Length: 554
Image (tube, rainbow, N blue to C red; front, side):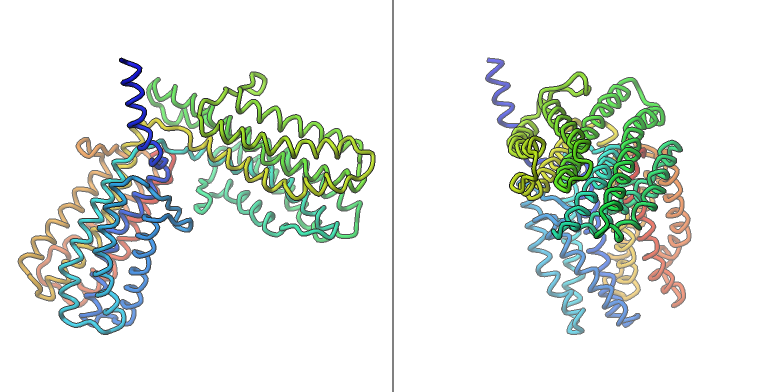
């Protein structure tokens, strides 16, 4: 009976698991769906500024930009959007709610475009006024639904390990591409160089597009500087290697030295999890979580190293074909192939020597099995290159043609390991609430400005004045919750200096603007201040949201 119950439970649970987003993906969805609420109010505000003839041309441009962003984001939430880093949430309730929003948006957008095209009538503005709150309300329901989802958040440390590990692969990819170019074959060296440099800078100084935070640990900084100095010596030789076999060989050797130095960085990032553990100073339960997290980082490190090996093997095969240090490079190729196979098998079945546990995740198991099939054929061609006394064009051709496929599959395995954790901590739940509330604040900056304009324009004055006061009170209360914490809202008090500082920036601005929102009559100068500075307040509040999503230790 118990087994039947468990089977039934799993059947009920599987669809939810299949549709779930990772906490990182969920945070992005909450952030951007929350931003939609703000945009609904920003568009309305900008439309009424146009109606009032205040900086008409400039506000039409702003309205167009807001409209385009709302539309792009809505479609991204429904269908996914790589540029916005939105992944589709297939939960049927969320999709149904987004369809409701889309239907409302269709009518609202028609009127907004009339304003943009200077064809709006009084009736148009009345429709905008009546519909914007409906759009806001339904969008807010969608945000709440996203908050109701749950999945674990990927660590910033994991991303640093992942990308510093990718640097190792790129050193080998550059070597391979130099060789391809020397043989008159195509190689996307420029793109590889650009990515290597972007990651190298991002690891040191941070890069939002790569989801990297600047490292603060002296040992890692020092090691990355060593890698950077070596890279600056190597890069200028790339253009001189064509037709110069000796310089080509020296450049590739230097890239191998760079590989060693970058590998040291990876290991330091992996060990830095201990620093993260100390910084958190949480309970023993969280301590156990961090140990588990450290093990996950080790898996990401080794699975990430596989990407590098696919490029190193290809490079070595090409060196052998060019008869450059043939015997030495054959030894290196054999060693690289054995390590790739040992690690691949270890990721599946476990390996004590590599300190790898056997994976139990069915999806990852399936990915590894598929990768093993691809590897077997690739490995056979590597063996031909190793055993052949002469240049084997067919085997080399296969390696050159298929190494990118093996690289891609190896990289997909890294991503699968990153997304495999499914347990959610209290901190994760609190974080989602913070992203939600902070995101709502952005919307409120625009809502209260819109309502202030409606009051000044003598549109439903009594009703809009009540709404305005309610919006002011909500913004005020939520800001205090974000600064000092709120047990009811399950918001923890921030300890991150960056977040605390940014919240106080918002608080200072708000203290200056709040009296103007509450004042019944404004001078032209005061009105312009409200209109202009609410945009700055929005931007400062947006920084809080981004920090809430990105900062590792809230």
